[in-house]
Image (tube, rainbow, N blue to C red; front, side, top):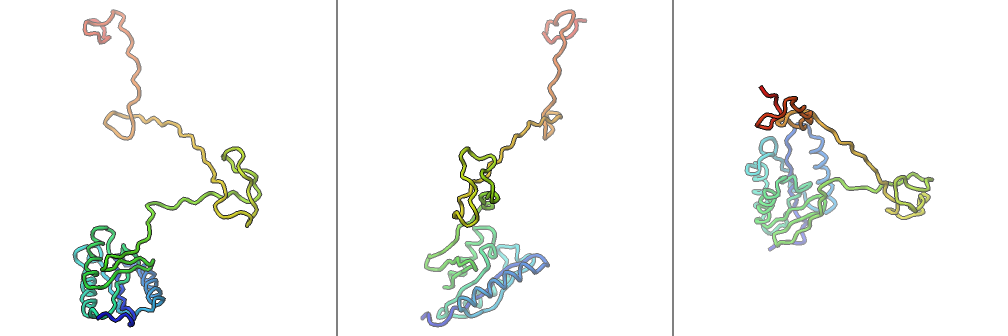
Length: 215
């Protein structure tokens, strides 16, 4: 029977390829701070390195961790803690398979962002940006209008007098001049230079109409 009064046992997992360990240490510190804030018991650290870290089907440390998760018993709340989902795999399908292996043992997976997936099908995951966020441009204090903005744009408010997000974004107008490249048809980038018109033959066109001199 599951003992819900006992703090969950957290198994911290990561993978690392390079010899530089600064980012790895930062992730480990974040995991430590997270599990301490949760009041979880530290069940150990498990790290795949080198080729194992790049592989999605050969994870020696991950397999050893799962054996320890299983050995802890179903009566203990068990969680695999990762800094983010990429610590399992950057490939979505492989990440799902590795997560499933944890869930089949009755444990759950959680990230330091508070995202989690449980065996009962419940999950919490934050939205991801596929590009850098766009921040509105704020004019410097004292300007009465934003260059390039529409007529009648509101004056720049004094600091603290307007809520965040009320500044008008600066409009940037760019004029792109066409660029013509010289080259042959089979070379990129570029397009052939326009050929000069063929001068008419003084003797008139040939029967083929190609404008060549008669001979």
